[in-house]
Image 1 (cartoon, rainbow, N blue to C red):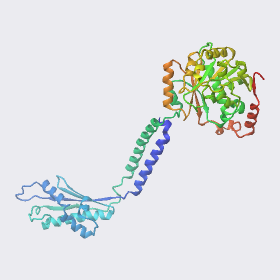
Image 2: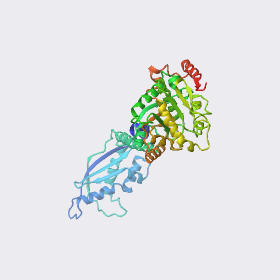
Image 3: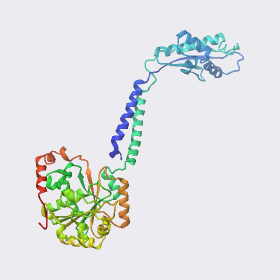
Image 4: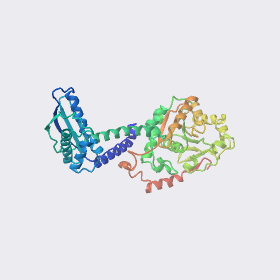
Length: 460
């Protein structure tokens, strides 16, 4: 999770350090100065302990009668209460009394501590620390051990501590943001997202590039490019995941969770890569609801599979040749009112069985799984399913639903094609393929023009 979302953690950490830097810069330094005295209360007939009386003396040090003379003497612009809050007066059992003053001015901190002590001694001597004259502390003798000196460094803020705490808060908040963002992200952004849901191997990563937007397969339009290489690897890897030889093991069913994930693009280009190797290939568009192979190849799609299954057109007439004599295409034909009836008919199964016998490879472009389970039915009949998942297009929820539905019907995809992957080591960053992937270049346009004249019909 950290590997996928580290940028969010870094942003939060930098923000935390920025806030910390602002606090450090705006923090006002506070200085502390302390003076120490020793007290003695021993006298004949004294029934109150030394420690108790010195405790009273420490409390008297912050009394208004002690602090007001200090304010007047030093010309402090503050109230008695505010001055008291900046003082700490304490005593211990050994008879030591300590008066500590804090101020933003180091010299003022020392002056306040010393002046408070002097005022305290005077108030005890005058017996004026209380409203009534009781002579309770007349026998207390105080002697200075050390006067307060001007401090050389502030006691706050603690710069190192602030930076440490800021960094710690940034790391903790960064990890929290990473977790929240990861769980909130509904899109499939990494290959690991697919494997956690599907438990199916990813047999190819197909880069996101404009080369796929043309009306020619990339092995035709850009045969030396990165995209063409990725498609050829997909065709090669398909040989390794094909199940044991059966009557329909050479039928590859290509589907996706939803629309716009590039299943038709993968089907068209995979069929072209197989045809490039000299194999007899039939590319079939079974998405009768939303045909797309005809537009992807720039061919006439009015007559196709729907007419063949309905018995209106002979198969030989509906099939078209494309690019090479061994590459045949069967478009979906005009949209039908009840496509499910045709796709799930005995005629469809008979057609696939005969196609599997006649061709080396049959590539079937199916309707997305969230629309119908045609792909699952073809797979159960013996076909090899490839599930197309597009980076930052497919959703985790949709993929989970597909995984559940496939498990329910007993159909398992043989591999996943991770499509529209943002280039990290592909495209123009790769010097080897720099020229060939120049989609604006003359070679690309020439290849497209040549391929547009290579569409033929069997009856021509």
